[in-house]
Length: 131
Length: 134
Length: 289
Image 1 (cartoon, one colour):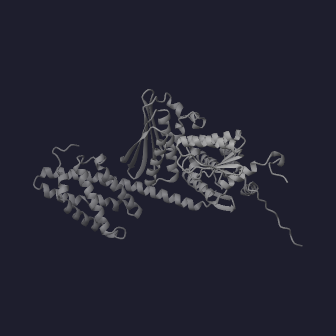
Image 2: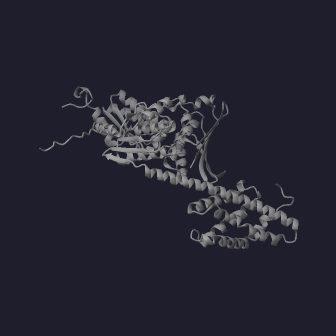
Image 3: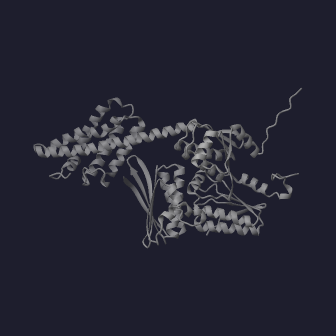
């Protein structure tokens, strides 16, 4: 079975979903990302869904699971590039995805991850980096 | 009301769920549905196809292109001969959301379509019919 | 409505197809003398020939006057398509219905010739023919009406899109001033446009200004909230500005919770918030002495 490739970009991992995923492929991605976070000691994960024309409850749960699991493993996950029609549908469907961080595209997702990576000692009270 | 075209797809494996999505999408593109309408229907179809496989032990999805006077619609009937749903009211409630993994997600799917019909008898099976009009 | 004897109409239609078609075209061209600007003779000939052949096929299939039967599906589909195209081109309902009704005279002529001297048979066949064409004519009228309504609705939505511009205030910041009464359909369209604009411009902040909206009902409020949620899923934040006391009251009254959506009283406040979020600052230049 084909698996979705995961690229290492410095301290972060990037997975770009470009196919209409069947359930097993989604589960494989979930496993691979969590495995790689540990193996590569990644501090962040970007999942690019800008090619996905549909996100149903199964895929939504997979994304939420990845976010939760990587967080436990010390890495933040950002899902980027959700299409308007998909976003509208997810809202109507009732999927909350409340604990999944999102960004418009890979660049902005990186910004989120980079700003997250500042350790607390280097921030002022509002989370802004000092020095 | 007329049925202009019909096609039945088997629902056995998770690959079949993808096939249903792609077929529904293709039909709706040809019937010139808007993008948001397409996405809603394809998503509902994915949910219902998965239900038939995961809870119904497999079944079929029948697509039909409808013509009612001037308007066009797509109807999909999901059928399985599985254990059935003992309490349909409960299953349709939002408490049974896909979010919590309690499966079914029928309430959500209902919101994604224009017409939603469900028949289920424990021990006999389940039939869910959904329609989107253009 | 069973006839006392089997109708010969299907036979008559099939046998005299060519004559009926020619007579029918003559009838239509005489009536259409004012609309040659919209429809060419060759197009009319093609449409008439096609419909007549569908009519003959359906008539021959058995259920002659029940035009809701499956045997008549192709004929109905053709008439629906015809109505739609006539409606789009700007024909009147009468001009469109004439297509079917003008078939009566030629059909009656063919029946008279075939049945000839038998007065009772003639009356029966003419009656059957009338019933059939009336039903088809009414069907055409109805589908014409539906098409017209669809067209008007579509034009209204297009006008709404034009009247609700999405403004790029700054790099990464969009503003959408909503003006006038919002109804469910309009709000949906506008919101979809906003979400697309967010993607197209790569803007992470969108200001929805409802200063110009006199009232917000539950349905519209729900659409607004759904849009905010959808934007969030895409990675953008929506700020709602111009929430007047009356609207705030209505929403609380209706039990609509804005939750963690940022709301500001004025567009200026919303803009200040957006700049801050985007890491931008506006400074005053030093005045020269």
